[in-house]
Image (cartoon, rainbow, N blue to C red; front, side, top):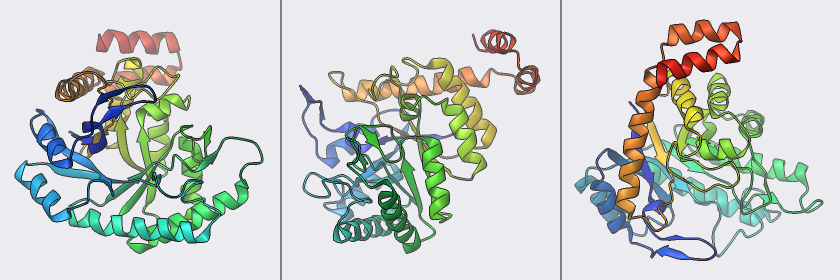
Length: 319
């Protein structure tokens, strides 16, 4: 069974462009909250925000019995790399990004994880002729190659997303990100499949998982949900229940069963602990629904390519 972790940022301040729902919290308080939520076994720590005092951080995690699913290395910062990080036109900025990620990789192993995940949200474009696409792919490939070469034992996982804050992110879908990983060539470069981002990209998340698995590039999974119009980071199953059931079915099919789920679910005005208690309970309930599917029977039905029979078979087994 996959363990559940929470991205630390989602245990802290909650705000949007219009309102602040919850003020920012220190990492100590975030750890205390997570440790009291039944079923949460770890955190996805954010670099560099959470690492002001690494020794104290490690001690707090150990004393609260929490593991680390991954280090979320932030490639967008408030004070630098405004026009992109991996794809910046400034070679000095790209070198800064590479050096910073190397530090994050070293820290990851100290904290018991071999996984760096990053979502290059600010690497993209808003307007036509804003970016030299050929140069941008070259810059990104060179940056990620240098990062991967620093320590091949540490997996670098690219989390794709169609947009935000850029109108179009450079790596916007599973297929684009997979093609990019192949072009870079390093075996420790893979993909973080965020269920909500996949939905937003117009994908079937289960199909995306199957594709990435075949290429040996499915490195990590984030779970949340949305209404297909915006990345709302909602409770799992809130809108796309049957897609999530199919996703869990395929995760078991491809052997992603003894790893971690990382959660980024926005609590907004709801108590943070109550919100993530629901995350845990819904996750296990929906996994339970997926487990009701007789795999041999479903495979027989899928071979018929009869969508009516397939859907009715799934509903009869699950519900």
